[in-house]
Image 1 (cartoon, rainbow, N blue to C red):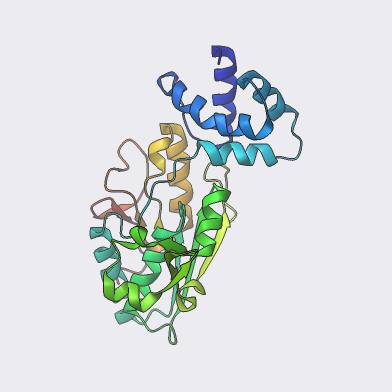
Image 2: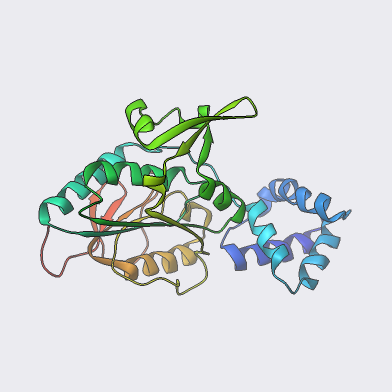
Length: 273
């Protein structure tokens, strides 16, 4: 791929997804684009760029974002933060809070929002509380996997056995053991495609807990600032923002308070719970 084509493609990718591909990642981009070239029976990246620019449906742009997105996740990733989540939910229960709204902003193939649901619904009685979880991602391919909610046995290895048996059911498909999330968990989660670099977000505010983990590391600083501003806007007073333990808000203007390791809280108008 010549440099001019690389610059045009990376500019399109940045505009549409916020993902930055510096020149040292050129080989990675070429590798990921190979799938689209093969699918479209094209020979060069220059031909692909032309096809992308001529597409008026937006379908190829969606497929491009799918192939360049990084989707690495597993159940109970950075498990310590789920202990913090349990404490927050316990405090909500003790305070008499009846409605809990949660947004998992980088849901990938579903392991994180399902883990959130396992923990929340083990702490409160859904018969007496409304629990709504929005799970979003930019990648349509992984979202379809998340909606299906079925995982190979090795993928649920980090789920504690008693939680797995309570919230998942085992089946066999073509001789392969699969674990599928049970309906009593799935009914609380809505999956939706959402692009974190298209502002403002098409969501209403007053979200109690937002998980936005392992996604802003792919954005540059200006994009991170805009994302954090949107997340802060959507959080309810007293609401919590969870980042990955490798992420922080250094260098980003915000009014959130530290509430744990890579956990932030929006100041409450009425005091602490």
